[in-house]
Each structure stands twice: as structure tokens, then as C-alpha cells.
Image 1: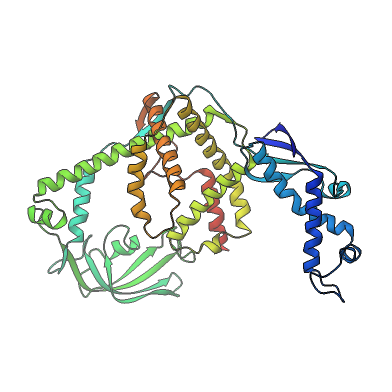
Image 2: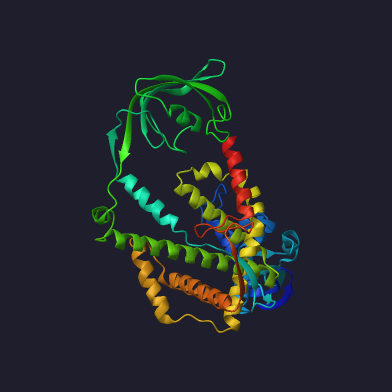
Length: 462
């Protein structure tokens, strides 16, 4: 087989492949044999049809078409292997099939063209001394008190309220009935012996504040306005009147803040030790969040540093990775992915996620190239330790350890390379909330992903 290569734009290689006469004969004969065993011709048993009858009934053009279809794919794969072309994704035949069919003569050489995508070459600008801004997440001691307060409330007991009116943080037991301003009963807005926690964000705010000040046995009409973001669109921002009867009133009795509480809420023996552990946790979280913000800022900066002519195959793969991650997240939320990802929504979602896919690939290429230039490698001990940590979590699953090892190696190398970039970067820490894009809980939703989510929301609404 003769093969000539041509470098094309968008990280593609053009191949001119010449198939030998022996091969064109081989596939032609295989086509006739297949028809002999599969064709239904009256008067002949399958497998016993004479060659000449096959050619007469099927026509030589149809036989040649079958042979040509069978010949192309293995010939391209052989050419890729023979020339050691680092192909990614599917090939594309550039020669017109009908014209190839006209020139296809069994026993004679056949030449056709194809293109394949190959890994792109990345060109890097200056990557040492990257100047980035990142938000500094500062430890707030109030977080510790809030956390302990929530723990106490979780372990609180409820006791009857005697001799006073309802106040915030109480639990009111009420009968209520809601009507719109025109007197129409609101469907689902009636209940008896219903517990309402008189706290902000726990129920309709106007109703909560309307109950505050009531005494047990009292009846009151409370004017409310449903929140603009109320889940029921027919009630959002609508005025209403609730008739409320306060039947009982309870309050939470918090456990004493002492060593006994610490023992019950944690593995520590004293309240001081328990509090110190929480302080340490929030301090570490603040440091980790700040560090993640720096990492994200550097990853974003790499997009402008890297230049690459990306193949369509790579963009398509990364786009699908983004959509698959979104699908997994929605599935974890209990949403029906099949209803969200449809023939109608997927094309537009792919279009919106395409810029993010391109950015992701450029980041990956830049990190890999920097690791290569700076000789940043991962030791076997680190890889083995990570595998030992992950494999037990995958118990019962069919694991390809070679693929897992490759994935871990790439991931650890990325971590080390980003650490190297951080050490050599010029980082300016700025106050939390001062940058337009912030990272929370180690995750950021890109603009493209946000638009894709909007498309899904519209689909659900329809």
C-alpha cells in the first residue's frame, strides 16, 4: 500500500491511499461470495448460485459498490497504522464514492483520499510570572458560633410556651385558610394543626410576621404578598388574605453549651477542644477556597497563553464531556435526563457549550506542554498511593487498571504543574466578592453551561 500525507488546517492530516490490485480483487471476490450465500434467486439454493448468475441478476456495479464499501475502512486503518499517524476520532473520505466506483476495476490499483484528525500542536506564550487576581476567602470567627448554634438546634427539644405571645423562633401550631384578594380560595392553602417555624426563610415571610404577637386561641386575618419567586407561578407576587387560628405555641429548648454537649455532638471530651476543631476546619476551608480561586485564575489565564488549531473531533468530545457532566448532576438531583436532553435541546446546548469546550482543551494542552517543557513528572509511588485510595471506592465495578493508571497519572501531573505555575505566578489577592466571577464550593458554572441550563429550563416549562 502506498500512502502520501499532507498536513491540513485544524490539526488534520490528508491521506492519499493507493490500494493494490490484489486487494481490489480480494474485496470484489468477497462481495460475490457474500451474495452467493445470501441472495434469494428463484431456482437456486443459497450458496449454490453460480457466479455468472449473481453478476447477471445483481449487476457488476452493485457488486463493485459492495466491494468498495467493504474495502475503504480497513484500507484507511491499515494506512494509519502503516504511517504511524496519531489519529483521533473518525476519518472522513474526501473522494467522491460514485467517481471511485467508476474507476474501480478488480485487479487494478485504486487511489482514494481521506482525512483524519490528529492531536493539535500547542504554541505557548510566556507562562512564567502569570499575573492573576484571585479572591481571598477570609476566615470569619462568626462561622464557628453559627455552626455550633445549628448543632444545638438540631439537638433541641420542644417545650410548651406559657404566658406570652408568639415571637420569632417559636413553633406555631395553626389552622389556616388562604384566599386571594377577590375572595377566591387558594387551592392547597388550607391546613389544620400545621406547624410553622417562625423563622425567616422557613415559610411565607408576611405570614410568619403576621403570626408573631398572637396568643394561643386568637384568630387573626393576615395580609400577605407571595414572593416573586414563589414556586407556583399563579401565586407569585400575588396579594392574599390568610385566616389564622393559633392553637398551640412551642419553643425550642437548647442543650447547655458545655462539655456534655461537646461529647454528644463530637468525638471530643471538652467544649474547648470541640470549638478548636471547628475553628481549624473553617480556617482550612478558607485557605482551600482561596487556593482554589488562585488555581482557577491561573487556568483561565492559560487560555490566553495557549494557541492551538483544534481538530473538530477534540471539540466534539469535550463538548459531550460537558453535557455528560451536566446530565449526571441533573440525574443526582432526581431529574429525568431523558426529558431534558432531547433532539430539540441537545444541538443548541452543544452550540452554547462549544466555547467552554475550546477553553478546556486549550487549558489541557497548555498544562501538558508546560509539564513537558519543565520536566514535571509523577513518581510511581504517588500513582500507586492514589490507585490504592481509589480502587476500594470502585469495588464491584469492572475496572481497567491501565486506563485508571493513565487517568491518575494525568490528573496528578496536572496538579503538580498547576502548583508549579502558582509558585511562579504573580498573584494579587483581592477581597471576596470584588471580582465578577467567583468560585464557590470548588465549582464554577461557565457562561456556556448557564445558557445550556436555561435551554433545559425552557424545555421543562414547555
